[in-house]
Image (tube, rainbow, N blue to C red):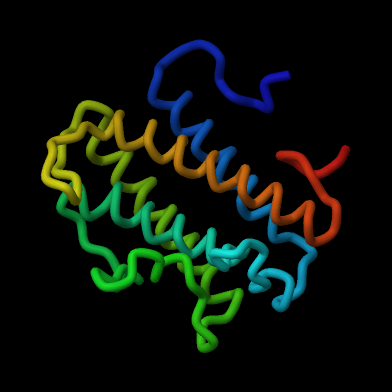
Length: 166
């Protein structure tokens, strides 16, 4: 069971396919929940499903665009609040956050296609990184938060897994 991941051929399409699958999992975790459920803090630190998606949008833009010298829309980072990108403000709707994530993924996809796996950029902490490394890191980051989302969703309504039931 490979869930349509390419299992042979070029590395680039494999990596992008796996990243896209993790992105789909994150969006599916929100499906069918109301706004209150999506915003409900489920851990002592306040983690909620919508905040995880907002965070992933910000880091998609940061890693894929800022790292490679591409423009982004304003990002919810705050030097005085390291968790600002995880918080959903009262004036941000679910639709706003989902649209932010879609735009970030679209910008990331464009950067991946134009920069190529071996293209290099400068990470926020000053080190040189390749696009290949950034894609691998974002697979890791997105899968990690998809796991968090799986637990939060189970706590909300009992739904688990990485895809809708067949």
